[in-house]
Length: 168
Ligand code: FES
Ligand code: FES
Image (cartoon, rainbow, N blue to C red; front, side, top):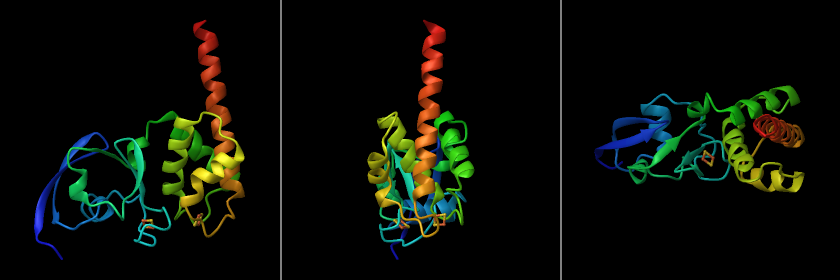
């Protein structure tokens, strides 16, 4: 284990200083030092996607990202999306569709899906499956998760249309 260092990280809009080993991963720091436990430690080797968080607006594997490499960058975990309308729509759709079973994969799925609907407002099924292909789920068989993302994306697109019509 490397010697300990102080890292100054911007996490969910707040500057946090952490004293952790120089080789600590972002996932280690989030879960073990900051008690932000939405991101899960699954494989811990970059395969399952359970640890997915956003760094500078891009989904990354927390287990493969050194905490020190995030100095000066904006880290957003699922906890940081508490007031985000798109994330709320995705969470509700996941619950309603039965896309949450044990829940272990859910945080990573939601972060990835949130990024997808930001990039592609109404993604089709192949686009959703492709986007989520790096997030593994042992429970659902994916069908309900794909349905949830489809439903949430449609709902968000409708809300956007309604708002635009109200302004016009
Ligand atoms: S815990 Fe990071 S990809 Fe599995
Ligand atoms: S809901 Fe259990 S791993 Fe996805």
